[in-house]
Image (cartoon, rainbow, N blue to C red; front, side, top):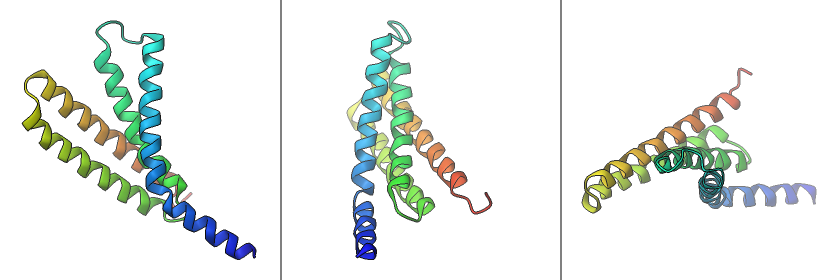
Length: 134
């Protein structure tokens, strides 16, 4: 009985990897964005700082939460989630060239690149945290 419960929990954890990652992305982005507005960090011209920090930490949360939720293979899961996220961000950058011009285009490209960096940093952290040499 205990073994079947453990198997069911593992299956549920594998199923919930992507939904929990996406949920954490939105929650962290909203928390950082709203928190910065509450404390008025950056003043009137600091909107780009708030968006950059939100982009970085939401991407990092996407990879980290997905890797932690997985019952095993944390490194592989972080690589798959990072690759998926990076491909989506690269697609976002390509689509931005057709949708935006000037500073709006620059903003979209920079925030996407910052998200990619956050994703990579989180993946490296997961790899170091779950290394066999600890």
